[in-house]
Image (cartoon, rainbow, N blue to C red):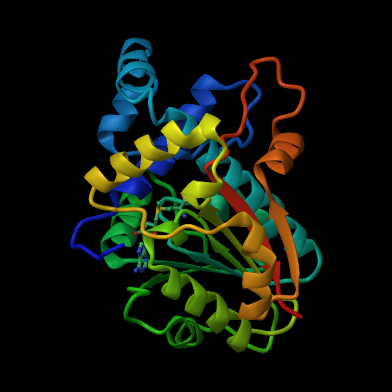
Length: 291
Ligand SMILES: C[S@@+](CC[C@H](N)C(=O)[O-])C[C@H]1O[C@@H](n2cnc3c(N)ncnc32)[C@H](O)[C@@H]1O
């Protein structure tokens, strides 16, 4: 994704998706009750208003709305895995391309147990911090806000300059980003994390399934979403064949993998729902661990 002077539009859509989820789906997959306050003015008007919600979300955006399940499911997965990692002794969490992530704010119990490094391009991060201020949401004292362009700045230079300790394991959360980067950048970033961090460091990320591997049921959603984000100026430029994931990650330095394929996401998070929500087979989720 190219860095512009303006805050990321897809980050704005992602927080709106988490906010709308609480108005649409019961029980929620994740209760991000701070998502609505963190939304832009326009989404704050649309989401809680029945008519506008129907008009914009159910009518105008109907071809892309199913992809919002990816947004709130990955947020839930990130939260589950981060809490588990902290329980197991990890005290450094790095959120790459954090957008309007509210994990750190919603978990004050982690304040004295973890350092959370939120990295994002400057314009998006400034916008996030100003939305927090406007909503009287204080900045948690365990968060290091790092404005960086990951296409140019070295990830570990910026992390270590902000107190990251490479000899201790960490959890990297990298959601909603890989498909906006060339495949070589995804690969080199994963390699770099494995080479520069301690054993048992985990990387969580999501990826777009290579189009030729997508179940015909989900092709039109894939194509609508690709077109939609491209019009927003943030094009999907890389995808991965799920069958090659284990080998790919092994080559990047990760010997253990938790691969939440579409079926697994459905059984882990969407089983026994009375509303029939089904996770779409367009974007899958991974946790890679290097030992
Ligand atoms: C689709 S949003 C995802 C936000 C959040 N992680 C989520 O899952 O909802 C992508 C984020 O990556 C950030 N980003 C994109 N390219 C970047 C780069 N080169 N350097 C730093 N951040 C970048 C954007 O500013 C934006 O916040």
